[in-house]
Image 1 (cartoon, one colour):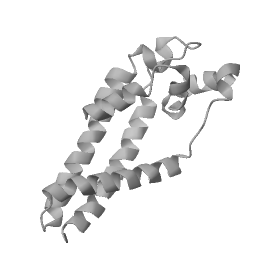
Image 2: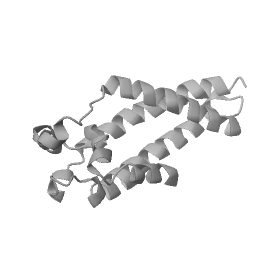
Image 3: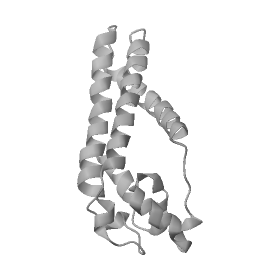
Length: 150
């Protein structure tokens, strides 16, 4: 989980790095970014369905690999273990990275939008947590099923 935190930390700190996470920012900040001449051209939006599918495939493989070490010829065991891993990662992302660190650190703010109050709305993070909850649940079902046959 510390690897996840390090990746998040290294992906922030400059306006260009922060713009890569455009969709993570509250709507108010996104509006200010779109209205700013310096930032507008650098914004790259991603389709939520495409992002979900890519994350799904990546974590399907990652959790399958982790699951090999803990697998049993029992779907329920595999499902529960993979659910704990996936939802634990999801909860860590929400609580530690999104709600504690991300909302309070200066390195996620933009030089032309320094107001801390604008970055405090947790709605985007909670929506992301909900999508990831479903994703990890589906992954646990699929990988749990496949692992019982190895």
